Image 1 (cartoon, rainbow, N blue to C red):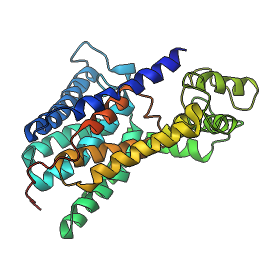
Image 2: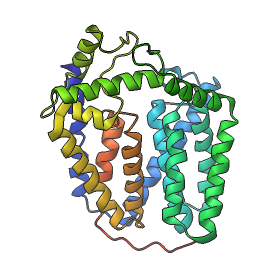
Image 3: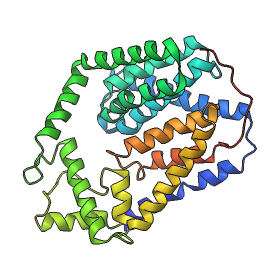
Length: 324
């Protein structure tokens, strides 16, 4: 019952989309919203460094270094969102001056490297080049792509990052569902995904229900169909789409995909407008990141996707001037 109510509560944040749709948006309010989002992340990053260095008496969430007051997965995704936004702002100089964007990028990139958020690091490598090729033409496209490649290669020279990526590759290559390391990140994810797929096939129309993923996968583990995970509460499939299909069936996954398609289509149609690009980049994170995280489950992700849907994506503000 608890987990069912948690899903209902997360889904209920969709009210933010309706609230946003009724606001009398102006360009200055869009700019304030984006600046507040970036400012919050920068403040959290500074506090995360100070807490990790024991300058401040507080503790990082779950005692993971350099995460601050946010979960390491969400923080890494939010940082990538800022980088994707900055690619647009570097081109049009609409929000911040280039030097300020560079300063913010240095702070957040340091946190992205040092915090244990492989989810965001993977998205950085996947989505930043795609955004560059959408936004830029000519020499800028190639120089920026080379810069991203250099950053990605440089990340692998950081011992902690290299160790985390090597561990992830090793876990994925050597995974065996009947002899799995149930404490590994990929091992837990794959067990949850397989369990979710089986639940969907067993209950294809309406799913098992929003609160019954955990009981369902526990029953499979007790029947020795899946390895037991005594140190981990498996209440989602570690995949937005499998989770949705498992708990709400064809109807649920159909509605979920329709929502994402409709939102992405509206944002894409006028993608060079600031609010559209800002929303489109989070939608890209939500779609791709949802393949290895249940982003439809987390409170922060539910609030954010609702806020993106509430932005005036149909409204043309003053067109930004092309800078490069």
